[in-house]
Amino acid sequence: MAQIAQSKATKLSLLDFKNVSTRTFWITSISFFLCFFSWFGIVPFMPDVVKDLGLTPDQKWNSIILAVSGTVFARLLIGKLCDKYGPRLCYTWLLMLGAIPVILCGLVQTPMQFLICRLFIGFIGASFVITQVHTSLMFAPNIVGTANATSAGWGNLGGGANRLGMPLIAAAVVSFGVAEGEAWRYSMVVAGVICFLMGLVYFFFTKDTLQGNFKDLRASGEMVNTKKDQVGFLTVIKDYRTWILFLVYAACFGIELTVYGTMDDYLQNTFQLERVTAGNIVLSFALMNIFARTLGGFFGDRFGKLKGLRGRVLFLSGILAIQGTMLMTFSTTTSIIVGIVFLILFSLSVQMAEGATFSVVPFINKKAIGSVSGVVGAGGNVGAFLAAMLLKSQSAVAEKAAIVANEGLGVEAIRSAQSAASSAAVSSGYFIIGLIVVTTAIVALAIKFSNEDDEISEENIPNGELATIKIGADN
Image (cartoon, rainbow, N blue to C red; front, top):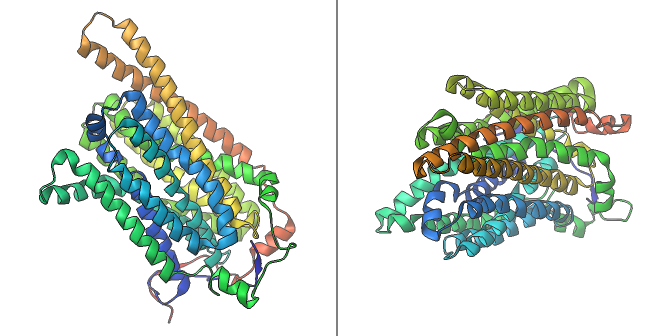
């Protein structure tokens, strides 16, 4: 990113809407929320989609994998674009162009069309990177972790809120005379139109930095754009710390995505819960983003104040190890009460780990925050892809074995055996994933910073104050 003499907000005053940093915080959080809402908007309607389009179980799994795969490439690209053009223009275009496959998803007629739309809808998941870049540009080191984590956490709520919001939209369109079997289509169109309109809001009501937009700052000479100040993408990917954080985010956000996408069936098959009950538990899991990510960023900032950048790394490693341990323990439980307790602890720790990750990211390379954020953000989706492939392969092998073992016992008996075998396979997969997460926590300790990095991290912190979130405007 080109060099610019920047002052940044040292407090997050949530109701001071005249403040550029606060206004940007809210708009970028809401935009992220809408992107996640649309990205996973089809999930509540999957039974209807399977019936309407005649999807096979394999096609259903592929739709999940494609939705997270497309995001990998988008996140890698969008980070560099943010460094060059600024987050304002990048988010505007992402919202407006990303709305197209969301709308088209409601118009598909074949399984192939559906899979293609799911792939391109995944591109809207790059919104996370822009959100993190924009808050990193707005807020000082003492609160950047808290601001990043809070905006990301509140944005992530869209991935859970759609379980309530999309059925409500469907109910609304049905009240206008639309057939229930077609309601999922209209709901996706509505979600896409809202994303498009939010792109216009982003363009007109945000700025790239507190000083102004990149284009204007370059024109006025306030933003220096020399070869010396430019940091190439190659420099970013040569930094080993970028790839460790790539692995770390794969181990937290990637695993959250996968667990979130498979937990409904797991709870129903393992604990014989009703579909609605299982869905509500998973929704509660997602709703913890209201505060859990913020806690991760907040404690990252606190440990940074106490022990410098090394403190941020130590906290990240510790919370990641707790996350893996909670998932492994959950996978071995046979009691629904005990299982819910450890699922809550897993939810809390995985979201804190995500917040803690992006309390470290802004300090890897201050001239290429977008590129670093893009690579690390892509790691989350790579993790989701690999974890989904692991669970899919284990479930497929277990189900085939169940069919062979129960051949001749009748359709219902075979289906019951398949469900039990799939549940056991997913449980085993969760344990393996948890073990990998703990290993990643140990690897995270290899992230090192120089004394100069520590000195730079103290910039823009008046009187050594700690991160604070204020409700209301400054007086």
